[in-house]
Length: 88
Image 1 (cartoon, rainbow, N blue to C red):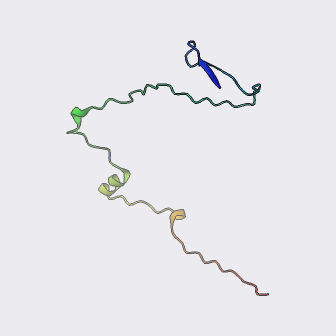
Image 2 (cartoon, one colour; image 1 turned 30 degrees about the vertical axis):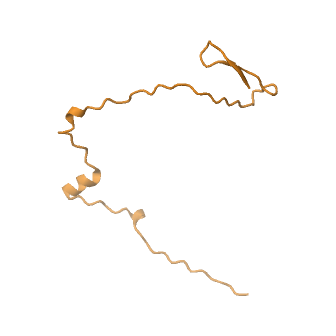
Image 3 (cartoon, rainbow, N blue to C red; image 1 turned 90 degrees about the vertical axis):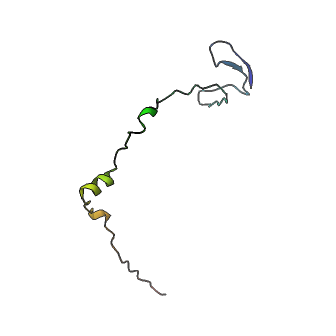
């Protein structure tokens, strides 16, 4: 049970537990703290008229007429499995 929040250091509190804590015990404390989300990028909207995206590998191969080589382990094969059923 959390008794009260302490002023220093930030996030510290006084608590009471039912029994003596051991090193093998796990204590969960659900708290709500304001989190500042960092800004990861700064979008440049002035270049949107001239912007073109990167081409995918499939688009590049199609433009240049390159066919992909079939890998032997990717080929579909029909396997037949015969089971012998013994009647008693």
